[in-house]
Image (cartoon, rainbow, N blue to C red; front, side, top):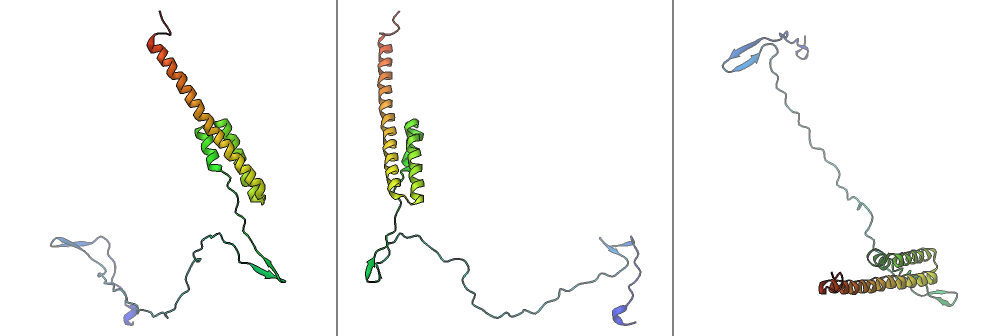
Length: 166
């Protein structure tokens, strides 16, 4: 038999002997395993390309004049007109809801027309949304003042005893 094919000693289960304060198991001798060290592999050094997309920023720009057949053509990028949607929502939620809802509807119509390319119609509806939102704000402020004055008069009449006089 070769050294690599030695037969291990027989295993006896449960036989322990006490030596000092430690127990040692009888049977197979304890084997020590050494961790194998693998040689460090060398990889070729490469410069890898940058990952991801380059940083992009949107910049509104006008294109330079171009010449076509002797004629100068200027390309202009149209910016959508303001739809005043924020003002409409503020007027609807915090001031006068009926007039504010009309302002919201007009501002949404302005946004829809701008997305379709009708800039004149979008501008008209945006201006109308602004007018309706202003009307909602002014109406709510005036109504608040009128109600406050009436409430003040009512309290003054109660305090002076003019109303509910027994």
